[in-house]
Image (cartoon, rainbow, N blue to C red):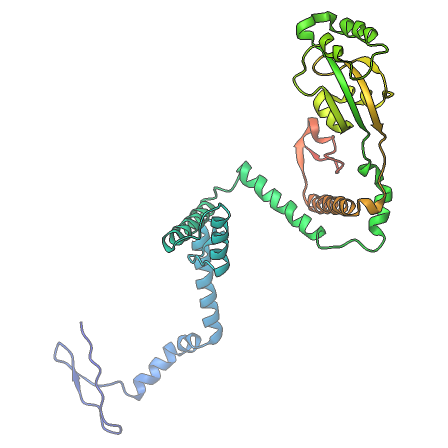
Length: 338
């Protein structure tokens, strides 16, 4: 059925209209309008109320929110991916850092497309909840939280005198290990078996009274895979080569004579120490830069620990009863899972 709208001059009587059945009809008169007003006026006035409009709009937004939440994770519903000039600059720097020439326009477009692809896959993965219960993602986010705590601590410079006071309290961290210059003769268990130590003791007796550079000494021992002479080496370096026990024994020897046998990770040795430099703690002025680096590291560790303890206090950890009574890294014991 079609409708037409007609108009007529103001003050003129409306012409008669006809229906499809041919029955004459006139526009409603005042009595009809009054009747309509008495039955439908309330609904008309309600529809014109602003409060009704707000309620209807709120209901519409609520329905839309419920629909979106039912269709996936709403954490990242934006369909807009925007790359800034800084993003493009970072991509260029990363490209140049690999020793390549400046990227061509085609290569730059490829880099941009790779970044867009990464962002698209990232957002879609979040929408599917693939980040949940993923050990790698959890570890990476935990590392970022630790980096945030470190950044907070790195903003502060030590106050005057604070660094020197901290050094006095932790001077042992900066102790210089003793150093030794020595030569040695090696006796291999692979060649000599269980008699390697006894052979070393017999050679020690034969070397009595011989000068340090006596050429016959090397003929009495076995070849060593590394050096036969070590000059001014710190004890910790010797420990990395021969083992801690050997290093401790060497720096305690009196210089000027062959001594031993001393066991290392390789076998047995006779050692002749040329000189020993005792360990010491350097003056603050010698290592002020090192002290500051250690202080910054200590502040970062403290900030991380303090931040984690504050975060940890907001959670109620529930563990199996067998382990719940054991405190975790000095933190309050967890509640048993019953």
